[in-house]
Image 1 (tube, helix red, strand yellow):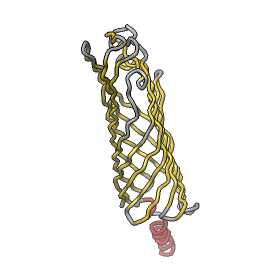
Image 2: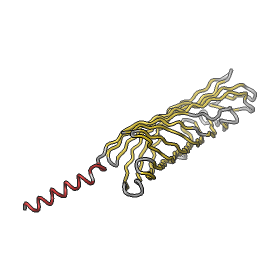
Image 3: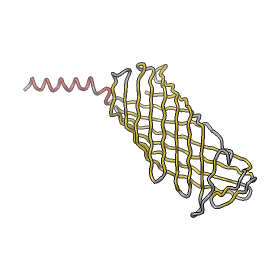
Image 4: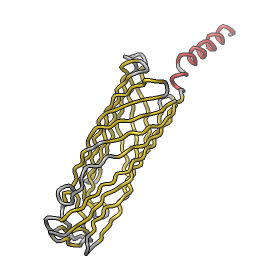
Length: 256
């Protein structure tokens, strides 16, 4: 009996030594990324069933590329990680439009000087579970399943001497997909990739990114990569839109 008890205790101790450090390791940190995307978009604003004009946001309204920061905080324990991020997208334009545009039931005549704005805050709450975490492959390799909720809270506006129309946009978007991380040099260099997306009722959203990350000093991480994001809105509060962002980014993180 005592011998069996010793074996059980020895097995438990061995489990704690070998498995517990990775299974229950704590980590937390914060990062700031600056994204430099190109921008393409079409928008239509109906009014009680009356169709509006499909607007090319760049060519018709003079809205151009903007660059913006992303602030993120994260907490992990073992194979579980929770991330909360915030970014603010604010695009504006001003020009004499070259054709008639119907927006929210009002007609802006060709030649009219129009100021326009499309802005939204994006709040992302993400949970990732690493169902495959192999620390001894290369300099570490993991794959995780991701559940995410992206909340868009903003508005679209067109203003002239005759009309000033503004419409709010509030859309929660649940998403699910995969993320992966590959270590290249132990505790120094790694590659990461992540893709999340969801489609429903004619609308869809996807967000994908890939990056190289370096740790030149303890607790400090420098990373850069490429991100692509696409949003299609099909009749949400009379709004129809297809907007695409894609471009490089660079960031700095502090983690413990």
